Image 1: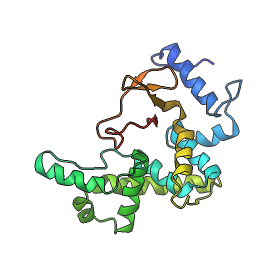
Image 2: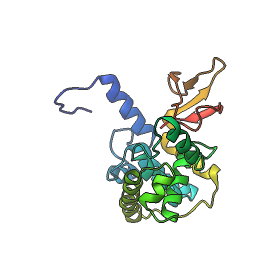
Image 3: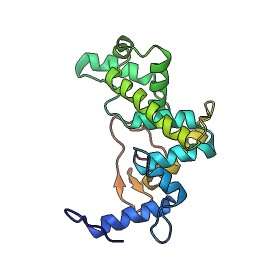
Image 4: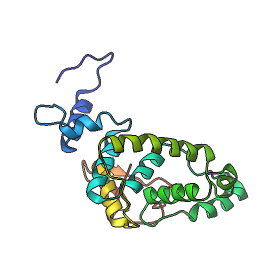
Length: 213
């Protein structure tokens, strides 16, 4: 496969990208887009998230994955200032924390925002960015149109965290890591040392395996 580049990327980077697309079922042995790959290429999100959206049909969790995909597309969802106000804000953030990890924590925050009126005042009182949350609602509406276009059902997993996590892994499978005895996480692919971000709900815990997005 040859392309014309303004500035050619390292050959190794291109090879890794192609390997990732092939492993995810986006391209075939000849480097051509598969049926799923053609659909994914039309989604305005990165491949891993698009893969999750399509996998949601298998795991019957389209409603939840749609919300998670939208939330991962925005930044600085939680507003944690310095000093004493930050300590109070952290207490509010913990109300949304899911022991299964950050993605389900984001889902809890989104569901609460929608349930309680989508107001800036409510966000301020619960350590959430009204701008980020409003943006997530907008992105979700856009992604919902793509799911409907491709006939992906908007089913709910009804709180089944196991199915939801399985769907998440289908998109972030390349980012899997396992905890080792020296106290670090090593990537499943390449055995690279990885670190859990201090803002992650898993930072103070030591699950045996994690998927880093």
